[in-house]
Image 1 (tube, rainbow, N blue to C red):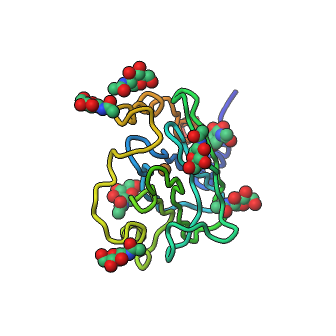
Image 2: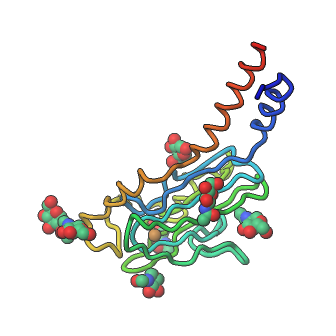
Length: 190
Ligand SMILES: *[C@@H]1O[C@H](CO)[C@@H](O)[C@H](O)[C@H]1NC(C)=O
Ligand SMILES: *[C@@H]1O[C@H](CO)[C@@H](O)[C@H](O)[C@H]1NC(C)=O
Ligand SMILES: *[C@@H]1O[C@H](CO)[C@@H](O)[C@H](O)[C@H]1NC(C)=O
Ligand SMILES: *[C@@H]1O[C@H](CO)[C@@H](O)[C@H](O)[C@H]1NC(C)=O
Ligand SMILES: *[C@@H]1O[C@H](CO)[C@@H](O)[C@H](O)[C@H]1NC(C)=O
Ligand SMILES: *[C@@H]1O[C@H](CO)[C@@H](O)[C@H](O)[C@H]1NC(C)=O
Ligand SMILES: *[C@@H]1O[C@H](CO)[C@@H](O)[C@H](O)[C@H]1NC(C)=O
Ligand SMILES: [Cu+2]
């Protein structure tokens, strides 16, 4: 089987436009999303939300009202994870590049949103992640850190660590990109 130059170039340009997966951990080790924000998310890219611990949700809101569900906004529902080895994965396809704003709607025993559990996709220079988060927390600088709720024990909230490593992230994509680069090199050598 031979890779022609044409095949290599076709593969390469396909790789340039292929949708990517943006992996986002939900509430791992604290009341936060990791990463807290993502830029350059394009149409057809997939947001892969990984729920590995506690009882969180991902709910779409608006920049002006971070802790309230947007009308007809998307909502993962509460996902109570009892076994970090059995995470829940929620994939959301992005349909355009307008900013998306999200929060966790858990309020027991305290509001995760007002403690800073918010996420921005494609924030802009006018509507930044920092401003969005400040709106959510009302400017509070209180550590949103380890005071997680719903866990068996606060000492165990980082137990998602092992589950965390279990995610493949976008390994498939990377492998594909590598393949096309190798394909070009191979094609040029023929
Ligand atoms: C936005 O996310 C990037 C990583 O993707 C991070 O380096 C940066 O600190 C984040 N910005 C804020 C304001 O948290
Ligand atoms: C998860 O949290 C929601 C909202 O607080 C609550 O209604 C639900 O009972 C919780 N689920 C479990 C299994 O604890
Ligand atoms: C979510 O997307 C990832 C990467 O595209 C894929 O590997 C996984 O099977 C999808 N999971 C679900 C539940 O759709
Ligand atoms: C994009 O459109 C699909 C299909 O209608 C929908 O399931 C998905 O929730 C949309 N994505 C967002 C971010 O609204
Ligand atoms: C927000 O903070 C201001 C000043 O710190 C305070 O006066 C106001 O009551 C707070 N609003 C809410 C909704 O907590
Ligand atoms: C967490 O661990 C610390 C010391 O490692 C201990 O003092 C504390 O009581 C523990 N808390 C719980 C809820 O287990
Ligand atoms: C952490 O959780 C495990 C099981 O989930 C339990 O065996 C262990 O005692 C817990 N540790 C603490 C400090 O609560
Ligand atoms: Cu939460």
